[in-house]
Length: 413
Ligand SMILES: [Zn+2]
Image (cartoon, rainbow, N blue to C red; front, side, top):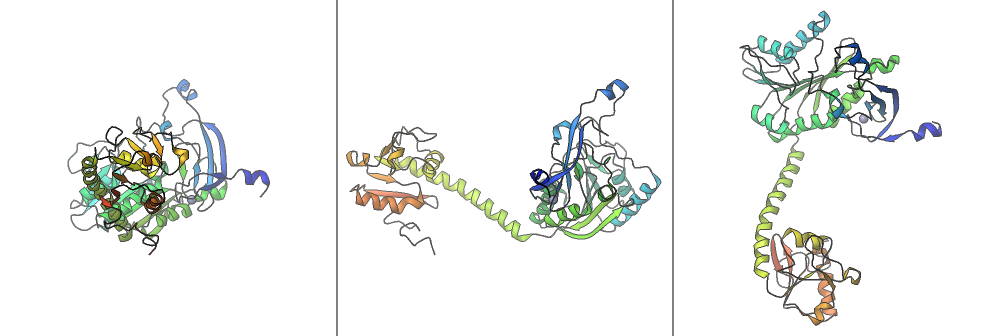
């Protein structure tokens, strides 16, 4: 690689696999939208806005994406993204695909299609299996008022909410992911939502495949709306990365599309992580209430807070140690003296302030500094009646209370 080529390597997150190293692949200059604007006059066509085509390729998976793409430029809200679904080969492909997918769905099961477009594929499924509930999601999709038709919801699919509500056996998404800014995130959300709700869900995803375009040097595939183009490799890596179990990767239409049939894996380790985080959040909220009540009782008791920045400032702000009720804040660091606590405004004094203005109670918000500060107080003959630290949502006495911060080795084991 020459120095110039090496210098062109850039940091850009791959939408398919998450790698952050990409190299320039195709620069098409500034071009107008190719499929979505539908100009109704020659003047309108000539006057269309133009957008930069700066396609790069991921070094890990070969995914090709326009690093200059901005979703806000794409007028999905005005025109549905209609696929041409009427060619004879295409119709046969869809019929076979529908039969294969329905074979996965048990009696009275539910099928969800994300991005149903004109609704024709979902309608075909609904017509061939009256026992299966078919529901489509697409904010810009078609509407229907016919009976015996699938339920078409003109809204975004929200993985956690809608998987919980509908408990689908099969989720289909065809020709959607190439339009998303974060397709990996999309499939990860589906995978995790199924795990969280303890469901095993089949997932069928289909996107255009640019293997042939890359192989034959075709550049017309790379236009603005198709900002994110899958190779077989990048598509497969995205599915693997998301934690899905891949049953089958297939190609259709002479290799111009690639599809994956996957199963969710029931990722118990990630669900456990999520539960831990949720417990932490709920407990933190309960502890804050208890601690604030305890702090309210301390007001007007000649309290000094030792520490006014960093974790100490977080403590002072989070638990309401305002300047009116808790005016005295000291710090071991003379450099901090004369500055003010962010957010609450107490003037920070050097610790020697406590020699001339003895405090009855010293609160030490930073657990990791507590032992050092207690030793510093002893050394400097600063002797409050009590030293308090927070532990598990309670203020406890440093010397007599239960906590793990009382000696140099307590936390190491
Ligand atoms: Zn990649």
